[in-house]
Length: 68
Image (cartoon, rainbow, N blue to C red; front, top):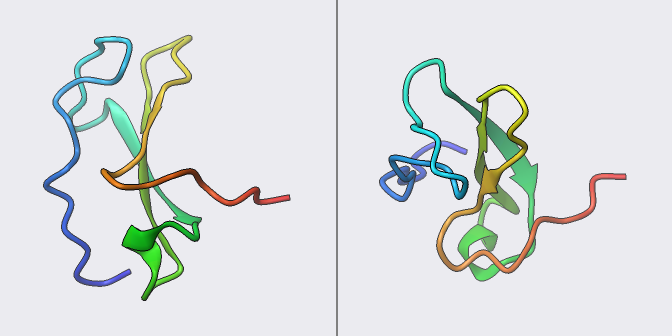
């Protein structure tokens, strides 16, 4: 997890809600995408606006591994 570049986090979620302190959740997820080769995972951003369930994956991510 250490040293991951988080410059890809956008200013808004896909639904247009502003992302910033207190307005997003940053989670670590398992993933097999090329970006996650060394660490077997990466961060994902979730919008915390009430009723919004949008998530933002880092560039190059082809999808997050099913956690079940």
